Image 1 (cartoon, rainbow over the protein chains, first blue to last red):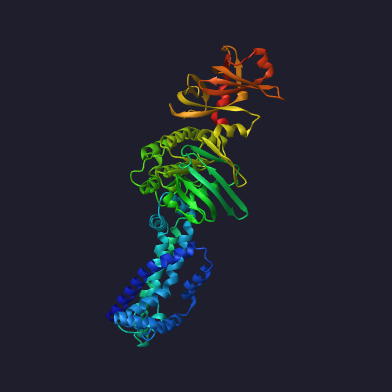
Image 2: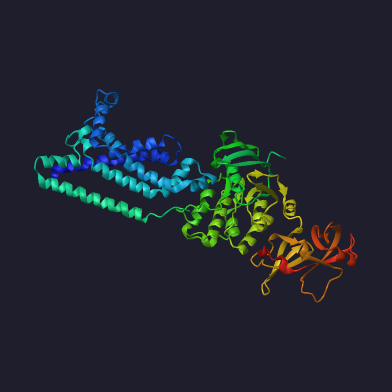
Length: 224
Length: 358
């Protein structure tokens, strides 16, 4: 069992970094999607939702093409950091961000949609600038949306397999995440260790999902 | 004198509806926007506040350009207080939190009414710790109005601000609100379809009809034009005291005073306006004992205007600097031999003055 600890720590680390970065990137995207009247909105929404339906291996395959050291992005990364994007933690983070994007953006967009224009207009008339309105009004009114988005992103990142295998490979302590370690145990017929990891993941997911549904059940309607 | 108030010349298309308005409003005082529902009153207010896009024309306030063609000053920089009809209180904050929201964002050192004054005016003290969700419609409107006033606005926009407040409280509140706005020199644009509310609050009236904004009239002219066949007078006075046992209050109009019901909650000293219909005023040559009519006021006849084609004549009566109009029959005027300059007694039934009756 102790052999699984690095994999667990690596996975938690990856999920935490991914969730944090997605908060920063996903919030403005979700805000834009909730408020824009642009004609390209459905197209951007479709792109955001794409990771939900594409097989993870497809995403992983394209990321491998894009991030490998001979491609422009991959080469740029090597010259800046001296490390490759493929088969590294940084590469895994980029892959996870893309893979988990809809789990961050969709709950946020729903939360922002529900606030509506009325309260925002009132705050503006009271002298609040757009940034001030976001922090004093939008953020507290969509707190549950943020919590849901964060939890779903985190747990979804923990469970990813295909993308990680394609982009990160299986390097212990570097890219071997929980689900890859589980696959390894099964391959090597170490069923007791596989059981421990699999059951752990099921229980954790169940607890987290229950928490999300419980939060959403208690969520009041802001339809002033 | 034109550079200090609100000026606009704007056009806005909303689907098939076209809003057109052009006016130059005085720098202080209260202008009521009057019109039937759907006439474009709220749209006009929103256009002035800058809440909607698709507006062409100009909006200027105090010499500052708010809107010109496509260039638009952001709403949060205009410092407009808006009391929305649907209140738009923030559900995640208590009443006190809502009140503090605008106050915290007012530039430091801006003059304006202070918190205690507004809390007293709107009787908000019992509500301060309450959650917004538990408030009644009228309570929400009072908080919304207080929140707008506390943001130290340079211009106040009131969209049916007290429509859900009960009549007694509204009667008490309107004169005080008017006084507060005048004391602090806050100009206000007020939307209402209640003639009584406009009469209590406005200095001028801006009629809006089918999206077309008319010319701005002084309140008296507008009230007179509303229904020329039923003249009335608008008298300003102060509440002198209450006779709680009989449910009557005394309103002083200079030397004279009127006794009337329905003002039980108005504090003594408050200034208020009374609308007296000309047909409710009778005349006598001397005080009449043994009569149910409580208000017997000495006045002087300023003018006699026979109404052609009717049996009536209207008399303008000087009442301590104000004018009270009476409508009596020509036959009655002839039989009393009334003449300009003559001193007579105006008789007004208290019940006809009840402000809750309109």
